[in-house]
Image (cartoon, rainbow, N blue to C red; front, side, top):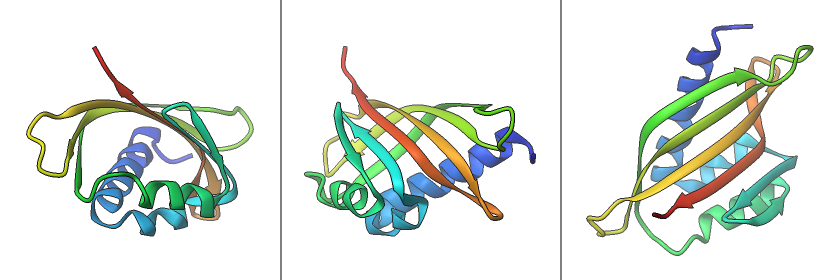
Length: 124
């Protein structure tokens, strides 16, 4: 397996750049077996996940990743568990929101897809 931290960084950079630019383009990262839990709401399947992300109640968003951690998630498959924390700047708001997100990435040919995605805003 390639270096876990390198794979995680490449995924995180691509995911958040794509999310911030055009959320509809995230569809290539999900499959019909993928699941997203967004603020406690579970959504299954690529089409439903992308529909949720595209219809979030903001026009502009900018993610600023502050921490990222990655571990192998299986002894037999080159899958990864990736944990991210950071700040969100939404629309023209100058007060960032704190978030955490966890991904389970499963190999698919020479790349990975998101099998599980859990997102939470962190209040406090």
